[in-house]
Length: 353
DNA sequence: AATTCGTGGAC
DNA sequence: TGTCCAAGAAT
Image (cartoon, rainbow, N blue to C red):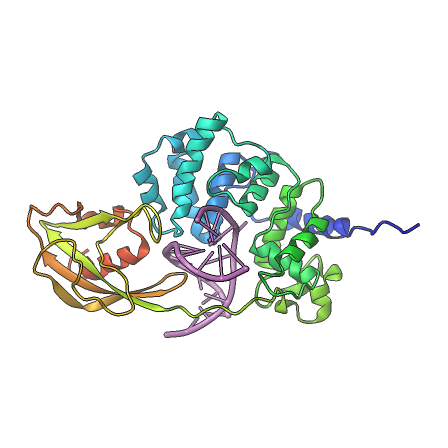
């Protein structure tokens, strides 16, 4: 009789969990010592913040958010602009919009408590495959296959999966499913992520310190850093625009960007359209004696580079194209980084600090 | 399936 | 300086 294929799950999860018990990072969203499961609200908030964002960047924002809005009820009742401003600088602002929508939905449709199942979590705004699995396993103890870029890399190396991404993702998921244990699935996921962050790093992985190296096909191949194989990335196009700095009595004109798209819903300095060539003074927010400064502001987004000319003008009291904000208090406006840069370039040098 | 979404740190 | 990369989701 053909033997059932012996799962390697215990071979991987045993040593990995032992390693995790000894080396887990101490993080504010993880369970306190002695507590079996962390607060689902804190797990969710941390997972949203950590999407494509480093632990070091998230730490202070997580502290600020949990202090100001400690639970779903508080966040659902919060002023939305205040939440968006608090998110300023973190990037991927759709996360903040979905954060608000999700909190409201949890309060309105789930009695202020998260549904415990991965499938139900998956239906909430801002919660995709990864985050649903992460919350279900970490906060609720469900077995779930949690796959982020760390797990993707670790699994691709463990099994020496050579199919380039993204085509290789189904094979990675199938392989990952074979090593996720029934117990401590959340710890297993966090252990895989910690391992990916500290040992199984993208470059120069520390295989000699890895608890899994004896069962790793990538290590055996002699070139573990070659996994996962990835398709080449497209070059970033260069775009140009103009920022309009209208000043009146120590105040500057700010606008609210459209609710969706790049920097959607965020407070901003007025700009014209962003195009393939410098647009100059076209599309100013109000009629004024605009003067182009010599300096420009450069910024790099995920898929294009942007160079912004800086136009300044005095404005009169009848200008009502947006919101007048005290320049001395510009840092509290919640501006995305590109506009914070521009404000510093214009107001910083001459404002005496 | 391929694009569109930010930002800052490491190398 | 340029490139890659990070606890991805939505469309």
